[in-house]
Length: 366
Length: 179
Image 1 (cartoon, rainbow over the protein chains, first blue to last red):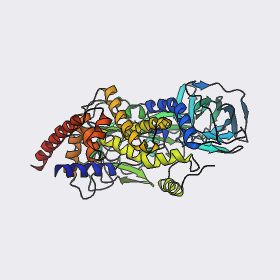
Image 2 (image 1 turned 135 degrees about the horizontal axis):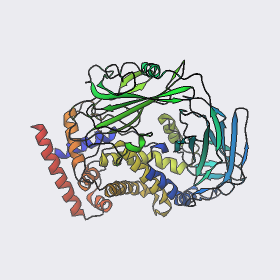
Image 3 (image 1 turned 180 degrees about the vertical axis):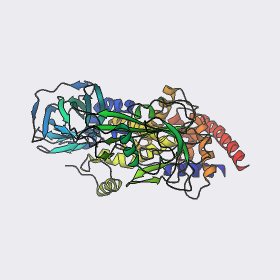
Image 4 (image 1 turned 45 degrees about the vertical axis):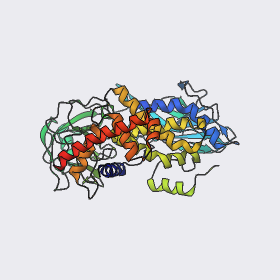
């Protein structure tokens, strides 16, 4: 009987696992390094399974980032294009970059590979990554876009390559550097761009008030103080049958040129140890990261751009890091997410929930 | 240009994946057929979805890198499974936390007793890593003990011993729960 019970439990646990993502942003630094290390052997493998008649782009893995020569640049109105050949001159990587970025909106950078070889080329795990540097230093570091499977690119054809497209939350000027990856990595020349200045900066307290009112309901009992300092309270889940979750809620305002970034930071439960919010919560989200203490804890943030007359939070929501300790998991906790303009409960809302980037509040009470 | 099969294409569209549908058919098929199972296995062995994603990606890339060296391509699933288990083991070795409970919880399936489910899950995740792996391989992957022994790099008798000790612990935990 115990055998069957075990089998059933494992089957049910497995049934809750979503499919393996092709999003390279999910990879840890270790896995990303492995992508580079395995390129050579993968190219060999694909040569075997793909058969003859196909010219393979020779891998340059292990050579690190190469310096492109020659480089061409140009572009249509409002955009600048930079490009460089790579993969033994068989491919050309072309990045199209807006010359003026809009605060609160994705950068709009696109990357494409062009086959300039005259023969079909197997493009291995093509992707792009993006560095954004501001006048005060790096603003957004080397994030890959979603990984794509190997692609046969016919002579003269081009393909769009996924690239991270972060929401702009920095003042200009910014230096954008695109890296193109397919077996080897080529860094395109940096492009300096401006960021639009929407108008006068909003008052800080007003920015907090307006930012929080963009996501009504959940923080009604955990509203940060007017000066942004943390307040202990409780999060009210959208499903009234779920218990509230104690939390500390704060709002940190950064003034940029013509807009403010309101960084809403939530720590649950309310008595969790003090924790510093890293600029990138992924840095502390993975095992071995820096979440303090040894109990269950959830960190949630969303960054909202506030101008003098608008609140923009598209695409900035829901960064989260959490650790749920097994063994003290009898208390159900809210597990909620924001979708279609309202808060929703996630699945069964059991403690822990599903935390693959969608569930943003989920922690077990001890 | 080599095209992937219609069923694979359909599955890609259904899943809304950002993969190239005109991709090399071989890797697309391998990914679709075995990627999810690799992640499930990693999850059952770690109880942590983000870590399982990472380890499964890691294992998949590593296994693909060895494709050319596999005498029998049909052995890819077994090789991938072995690579997943090794990736989990290497992770624990690096982090020196093989006996630490991991996990972020999982919603109880409809109809299940949530408390019992959570108790059993917690008990499983509290098992030493090798006991947990042996139990997952037998009761989830349905592997015979000699295959598990190959994956776990031990003798068949050791696999049986690992399972017996793990199940004993689970039994004790569940008897406490059942009262």
